[in-house]
Length: 314
Image (tube, rainbow, N blue to C red; front, side, top):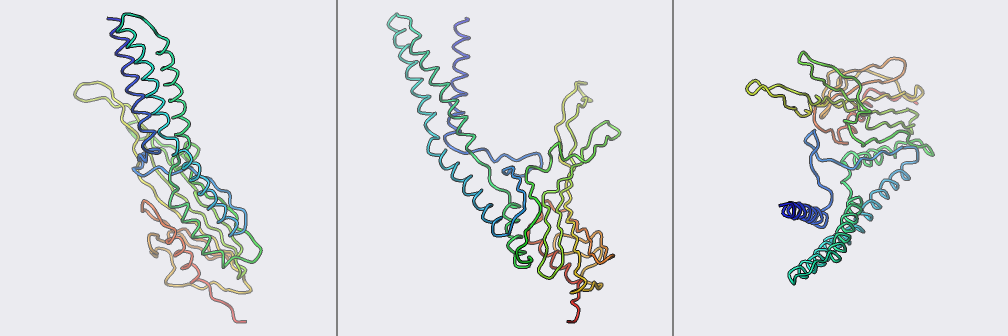
């Protein structure tokens, strides 16, 4: 009976290792959805403090190097599986010796060593796998390309791109509990911050913020059985805010009201929720309840904001 248990346990380990190595050989990291029901993308943080062309080249180089690392790992994906079969072959030798009435564990020990080596190599190969870059990563490139022609000569963009995740514990703004003692977390993720001195003398500041809600897992007692069971985390929705400030060059422009850009006005997926034109600045917040907001929407709002500016006569 003990021998049967040992053999059964060994068979389970062998089967689990086989499928782990098979998955390593066939595909890269799983594109499983996260709690938001969306694809998990590569966690990326970029500090923006350079000229546009230098930033764009750096972003392209980062993608190329990541792809190169993954491609290099792809050439070795089947090696751990071959090592696994080699280890199984060595164990079969001991089994064959056992059939002739002799007991030997020499080849079995060598086979186990090969299996351990195969597992370690598979772990290393999986680390070379990379997730896809988020659409926001490529969207920032298009925003920078669009704005670089409006940038003041010999100046740089300043800011950051934070794609490390919207639901990190470090981004919890506050928590609240309801009448059933369930905790809801409120996240604030400023994933884009950008400052630029423009050719016309204006100073542009843009901040893209995603505000999300998540209810934490909790214990609930069943009304039928009376037993407690754990309810999983639940994503409760998100809102996107685009906060913009334009410090207007008073020598070139004056701010004038415009019916096409006012509080409550809808512009693409956004709606102007706050607007102020005091003290020679245009400050506004554009809000959206859509799951995702593309870079074209951000550029459309920025372009519309310029309708509040009227160029002064020379």
